[in-house]
Image (cartoon, rainbow, N blue to C red; front, side, top):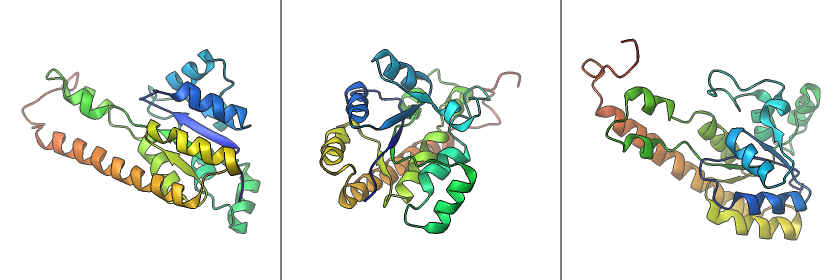
Length: 206
């Protein structure tokens, strides 16, 4: 069993993250993060590498592109026991990302505002978050993925015991990811069904 060495943390719901992340650091796990999450962790005195430094590319397009990069997704999706995957990782300088703690833009909260425009709603459709979550969940044999802060204690307990989480726990966490992304996409679809693009000119300039 390989040990967890690197975690990527990018959260809308930051409850409990300072304690969780500080425990990861004590266990020798390096932290990657973005934006407000990185700031919150640094404010707590933790050393964090920005994802932009990790990938060598800045955040761009008004923050629409932050984590959509082969160094992130290759680090998540490579199968540790697959020698061909490992040769490709070595050839392209990809480093493993073993733990993902991510939750999503608050789309439902945004559209609950009766003054929410279509433009506001669209900007609160998370792209990078679900992509990372689905990648980590697909590779649950090797990657621990957390969408719910209530799972922090279980994950820490297991890492402290063995350096990694159990397959049983990773499978449990994987199922929570697909349940979440299913609900998230359904909420977006249902809200958009109520929009008449022909009669509701929400975008600036239209």
